[in-house]
Length: 207
Image (cartoon, rainbow, N blue to C red; front, side, top):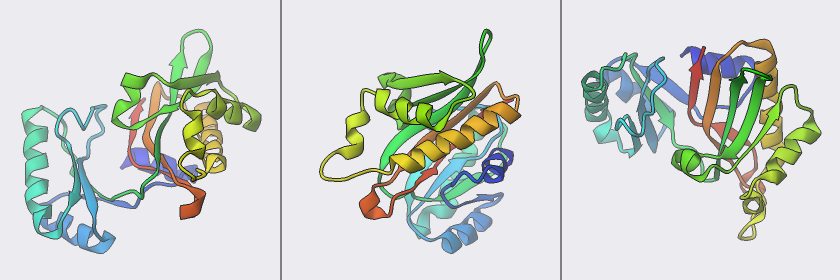
């Protein structure tokens, strides 16, 4: 999909995925990626997949083809442009964040960092800067979050450096692409004890 191609161009890590056009293709892709997997409606339209029932998690091998059919029906009933099903490796456990770009009428592109996942809009725990940002700004954005302490919680240390690196790459996108919106949500930040790093699970683009 075009949105994932954009992330690849800027070397932004994404959980392994493939786009299936049929139940049989979904089965082959899932078998190749390895279980457990997630399956999601693939569409260029800006939609909230979770609210539409367009996301299924921890799919076992014998449920892949039926899940493809169920997601197709959900897309059709909701009037969504259906481009296939995203077959994706389940992300390793970590802290879910949102990283995004929005166009401000006065200041131009601004970059956002906040608590992510399905609670992103509920928690409103965000830090915002006008682009361009420097690396010190990115670290400040992390430390400004109300939830910043979670990066060193329960005896684990989460890879803030990799999150800052992702912020810098998204900053580069904001400066080179005229996008109305870009949402990377969730971005899963892994603990250093698990090898660190962070990776994008889902992306939404409004051009």
